Length: 261
Image (cartoon, rainbow, N blue to C red; front, side, top):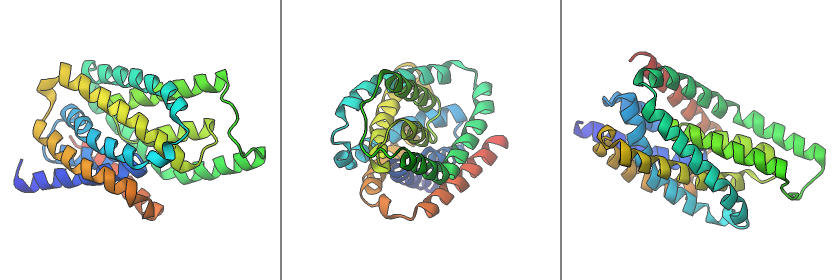
């Protein structure tokens, strides 16, 4: 890596850490940059997962006020996310590289679509809740808890395999099942994403050390550590349309880069 490429990777980590704390699509920034500096797709994904963990930690800490009163729910969902992360890591390490290269553009496209339609989904959820006339969160019954567990496992699997827009998927699913403000949903997302990325990263270090680019992972980690803090404290002041447009644009760049490899 040249000096300028190292700077680009670190800055991508900074941007990804900030975006992950607020939206949850930071991989759409780091992944194309890691591909652009010459990393193969699987190596880029593994190194990226390692590097984003510090940013996930600072982002979760920054949302600690929104986590008040959610400990019981998180204790229930966290194991499902961890199991999903292990499943996703297993799939990444055991599916052939050609399969990964074929699947990832579709996953990125799905993530871009989810980011783009998120405002419509949020308005639909708000209208749905207004029609119910229920303001307080009712007790979570067995059926809804099973759906939340399944959602945590599914998004954890996706995150362990390819982390882009894992958080957007979580907010979309949990927003359908929980009557919580977006910021509190985001706080749940930050904690679960931290667990998924940390467990997946640990699995990669144990069984796939030779597929980690430690320089890239370290640069992303340094940037995301700062970015997670900045995103959790200042990122909520950014105009959402501007941030969403940037994410969609970067996702399209990632798709083009992948299809041209």
